[in-house]
Length: 131
Length: 114
Image (tube, rainbow over all chains, first blue to last red; front, top):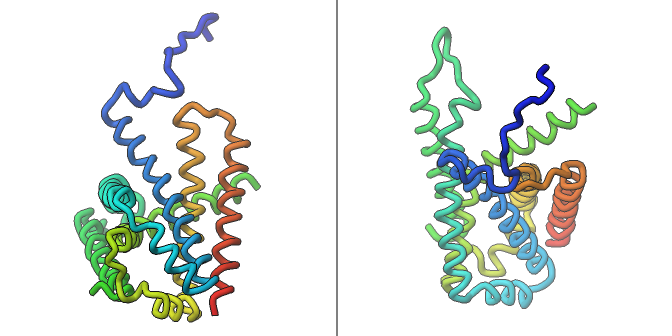
């Protein structure tokens, strides 16, 4: 080994700014904050639900403001483009399906995910009384 | 042992990622409806309480919350590393502790609905 090995200088905090792919990677990773946020928001909701009808109404009323409309709208778009769609796109790589000798084409798996997503979304909306 | 732990954490991450990719957009859309003041019929107290009081409803809500918190925990651990926080043991124990607390709270409040 060389006595003075070359160590490429690299920032540990801003390294992803060098390259578009890295930027997209970091934007994708940041969607995990939304997963954490909505998990705890739902836990708050369930706590209110377990308490009383008044607490549940207060939980709903607490969120009825313009800033939350903007936040949820932004979160919805961000989550779709940086988690849901990328996750479906990589699904055939993460779990390739073999049928006999051949691999099932990637597009089949991706389309299957989108169909399942529409069905699941419809079920949730139906349960919530939106549909 | 390290391998076994990794498999569990990775399994929860993958399952949580798939589940959140499928269900979270719809759930965020419901929150958006609530925020605009158009609370859907099924989220009125009587209906949502009946749903959460049933064992099927409890099971659905618990699975969503359980997988979401562990998925988020695993990814936030990686995010911390990506943003230059190189104390992985500390970060890991912090995020997994929060996920464990979230799991217990979800179970506790769900069981309190009857």
